[in-house]
Length: 224
Length: 201
Length: 203
Ligand SMILES: Nc1ncnc2c1ncn2[C@@H]1O[C@H](COP(=O)(O)OP(=O)(O)OP(=O)(O)O)[C@@H](O)[C@H]1O
Ligand SMILES: [Mg+2]
Image (tube, rainbow over the protein chains, first blue to last red):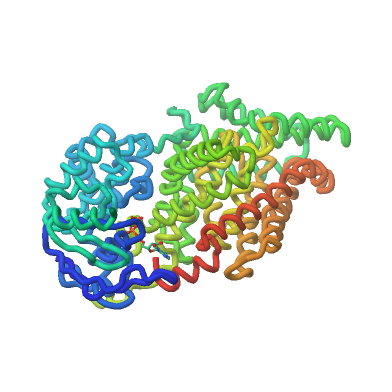
């Protein structure tokens, strides 16, 4: 459950979000809008990477201003560019990095890493350099490193932008199977077709908030 | 561990089995000793010892040459200069001293796993924790650098291709500015991802 | 959860971990063959000192010194990250060891001078910083160590090193031009601006 109440965000000289209020309870929430409209900023608010200048953001009842650390443990974040998100030289090491503070034994860490890599088809690459993966495989690895922590909420900022058709379909299919609440920022409109709710952002405000067909229709008209 | 590998030659010799810390300490002591050795006879003895150690290690001639190769021209030049300004014994001993120090260091590199040396060097840097750099962050810095080398290498080729497309290949500034800006953007995205993965919490 | 109410201010936040690592990697990559051949393919000139000066000018004193330390530790551990694929302990006992170790105070001094320039360091300051740190300090560390290792006198060693001076001066000028261009395109590339932003807590 994510709540934004009259959120304003100013970055440098620019007022990036101006009075955003929303309460997100649906399992699949999409966010669309023009370049620079403030989507990424909105996504970053959810795990406290960006803090509101005024207004409040709460996640499961916790204020991101005061409990950023605890919130980040429950909110996984997937960025557009997997290269900027994979921090360890090899595939298995990167997933294990996520588990570093779980207080697990080495065997348990290895078991969980192997399990999640197998599940997403990266099992045979466990000891390969991350650099040798394809773009789509890198995005899957980034996703594994997030999902291994079993977050309650998953926020994704344009997860399919750098992927080819096959890999973005794979991610779309995967999104459908995830048990978590998922918030996806994207320009890939078909991805949102079976979502529960779509927000349209323009110039820092929510200008439409409806089920996918209506919201996307509004967005297309706006962009025409 | 990352596609990048060191020069380690697997083996089971006495040198391979010595702990990395002991080898580093021995190397430091020997290099100091080489500097203090003045007589050509003493240096010849040291040279014999180094050769003997190479034989014991069993790393092979090719691996040994690869270690000394980088200083070959320097050694030749030094020998020539010393021969002109001083005499043959001086030329021989100072050249020998340079080659010996490099060869012995190379032997440690050849007989010690990169990961073992890294652990040992990390331990040497442990006092950095008083400056706010705990051992975990230190080893993260090392892994993150290894991870970043291929990413930045890719960035170099992408920037160069863009250069070519714009026809400004020859301008170093038109190449380096986008490269450094790109590297910074990448670094800042990486920092954000690290924060999202809880590094600062 | 009082510990969460006021998160401890990190002395070394994630943003800096990332910048230090990426610049250490950038210095390594600038040494790879064909990374940048300014003078054509004929002159094999290492651009790693260019990276060292850029690290100083952009990361500032401590972070740039740390980037150099990180790179040198990896090199010492045996990884071929120096120009021409060199690596291993041999480079630290060889005749150029001082020049290599000089990168550390060199980057730091470059950073220190640039940091005194505030939010918009001028080109003159950048050139001065790169010359003093990237050439001055590096030679000051490199020449005595080489003299010690080879047994040549300081004067003769300096004379021999002078062969590299024109190239290094050119690189220092290039580094300052590149640093200036970068800082105009990306204001956060100025150490003082970056520090202010981290202090403001805005990511
Ligand atoms: N650190 C910053 N300082 C100043 N302005 C910023 C900063 N970060 C973002 N902005 C500005 O805020 C606006 C919104 O940025 P944001 O990244 O949220 O947009 P977006 O909707 O995700 O766009 P895109 O579709 O291009 O990803 C942009 O105009 C951007 O230039
Ligand atoms: Mg965005």
